Image 1 (spheres, rainbow over the protein chains, first blue to last red):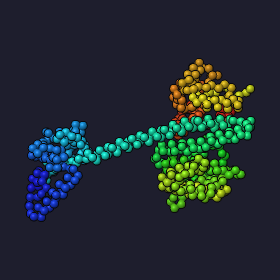
Image 2 (image 1 turned 180 degrees about the vertical axis):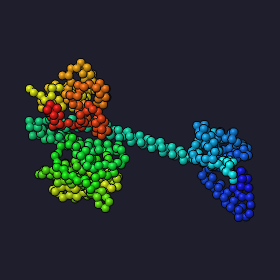
Image 3 (image 1 turned 90 degrees about the vertical axis):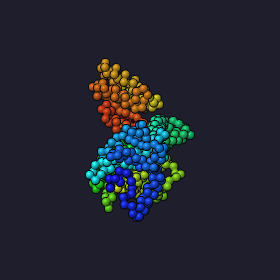
Length: 379
Length: 137
């Protein structure tokens, strides 16, 4: 009986008592409701009777005339030529007992192509022999169109972003070359031979070139940071510190300092290398730039662990910074402030966004005239 | 007059930069003969010519090489020159002097034997003195 029922792809049982009949009505209502609502139809192939079957909804989806009977021989016409081989392979695989779930292009009776989501599985008798296959397919043309549109727009956005990064690289590179020349020229100018007015003008040029260099350094940081490998790796903090100090020494920024370091409590950490390098480098450069004019620049760099959290500290004996500036630096709202005039400015904003992105936080403590302490909670 | 370096060269297409560096080198009397090439190709032709004829006195002791140049850029120059594998070049010190801000450029330069160091523009007067005086020491 079970075999017979399955062969007919029928839903209701042999015994037609009232409750079963009600169940059948209920099931069939639910089925037609679902199939209508989701634009899905049923298909099947009976290997014993060598018959193919499509339910009403499936015929409707494929726009098949009522008098047209479907068979394995004419079934190919309902698949788009490009996906015909795929459909045939899936059909064969399914005949061997494997289920499938896929997306492919189908065609209506009139040849109109649409995207369908199809699935199928083998039907077995009590002995486990495969006696047919059946499944459902769903018209997902609207959904697919939307998906393809989204993919296209994503691709466009990606390409546009890439282009913007390249542009920012080229622009900052070209600007940098000009600023370098301007700086060197202003350094070569002999102000002593000039009149007071002219000397003032030359000083202005020097300041302008310095400010340009600052803005450009910020632009450079942004341009390079977004392009880095975002894979977190284990970093030996001592080695990173040495690398950063070496690079600062090699840069045009020349400021002597005495460093005190202690990394024994937290020797290494898993972090995005480019981020941690930028954080450490910015904090040290800040300390160097804000040196107190009356004393040697001393910078303490150390790590520690507290409540399973790891911290990196950069502490200096520089000029320090007032509370309102600290509030401003750690606050998230920053609108009409010029970063250029500000030695801490954008640099801190950038490292703060990197620290936040890694799930940490930045604390700033300072006493005016005594120095500043930047504590980075890494993890 | 005694100069720390007999011969040096700048390979750079930025006229203003070349002009400024020349001024600094002159002011500080750091080099006797300074060669200037506007791109990698001009420099490569000169180097290959001199090295093939074994005219060692014509090989600059200090080479300042830019990266972004027309016709033949700094990387192409380095790759072409490396292929010749001239042993005489061991006496020269080559610095990449670039306004490139790309960290991958710095990493890339580390893998090239001919390159002593990577300097980011602007090169200060002190840096220049250091390069030339260190080389002569």
